[in-house]
Length: 69
Image (cartoon, rainbow, N blue to C red; front, side, top):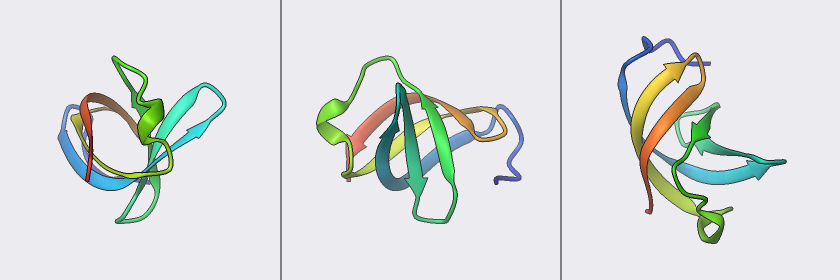
């Protein structure tokens, strides 16, 4: 979905979703990223958030932070 290179810093806004045990960012720009998270932000599911992290796979982001938008 994304053409950014692995290792690229990511700052994106969208809606945090959960599918099974995984968390995703439904991106405002289209598509979605699966998120690797240090903490489980269950209070932010289905809310608009901003994520900051690093692209570690084609659509996988290691998130340093997730905050309400």
